[in-house]
Length: 137
Length: 320
Ligand SMILES: Nc1nc2c(ncn2[C@@H]2O[C@H](COP(=O)(O)OP(=O)(O)OP(=O)(O)O)[C@@H](O)[C@H]2O)c(=O)[nH]1
Ligand SMILES: [Mg+2]
Image (cartoon, rainbow over all chains, first blue to last red):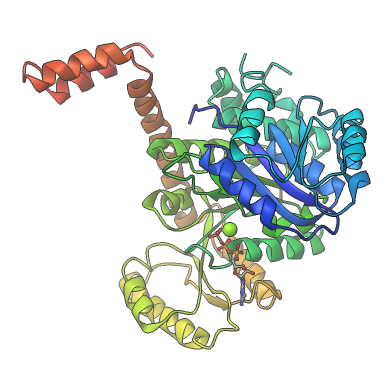
């Protein structure tokens, strides 16, 4: 069991009920050898952050299709406020350009538009997820 | 953050710090981080002997929904609970979608509940060792209950239930053919039988079938102090959950730690856990050994100048 698998949370925030994108990306990441904890719909920022800490994940992916972007900002401030600084958050969905700028200014690492390919997302995660050997030394 | 958490961080009280340390220790277990063994030894020796409930059954039987309801019940009584939810890894990619937690998310912000998902990751000794180690960590913390969920598909996943004090086998109402198939081995695992999705019309027939299997088993082992009850539940609505929880508590009041039955179980568990660790070390030695060295030995075996037993002796003799 010594393999260093990347562990990912895939979730939606608030009342976003569009599960298809999140379910598809969960399978794509599994097929790329990652371990995906899928949280589903109706998650509050507090629930997501607790899950991230208890599951000790390497990266968080939020699927966003409704315009509840302030909740995404709450996730990042709550996560950093809990002392987790090395776990990036990425967002996937049809996000307006000015909102992307705002989210990135608030510390969201990357935003993937609906046209992003599985490979793009996989490669991004492999390059940017919390360093795998960080705690092994 | 480049050292293992101090064992002292998790043993005293439940707190956000102890939750984080616990989570990081379980990651270290999954990643076989060097330096972990002495930490586990300390934690084991300080272990509390918390009540460990195993929940298993076929895919989709409603195990996670049932656990979700059990958490609600346990929390209503003011008690605390940790959950270890194991889902199978894909044999093709080695990845996994861990979907158990999804059913329990309503408890995600509760400070008296800790939920951790683990992927089964394939190797024989690996899973036993990883789950056994994660239980060492959880048992060092002051939980009232620990619940382990596995899918009862492979022998591996069923075997893991030997690490629990009591095993809840969750089934769904069965058709005639399934009942026939289920006969083999059904009495060997399970201290409490659950027929979930009892909204289904075959539920009563399944309950009667299980009860007659249990009665048959009674004749074979008349000295047993625990007889398996059969409980009907509906884990979406919560119907039957209180009944199940009462049977679980009754189990612990009958099977007290000082009864011969329980003592025997705990001895078995230690033996099982030890075998898991041993097997993991041996498998690891095979995988970690200098590949070229193993390849050379295999060359020699191919031409019958050597044999598999000689390679085993070499591996056992190797420092590691
Ligand atoms: N009708 C009915 N459906 C149920 C009941 N309990 C669970 N389900 C449904 O069965 C499906 C599987 O439930 P889970 O709780 O995920 O089952 P599981 O056994 O944990 O599944 P795996 O971990 O994937 O093996 C879900 O869609 C549940 O809503 C029940 O009592 N009645
Ligand atoms: Mg489940």
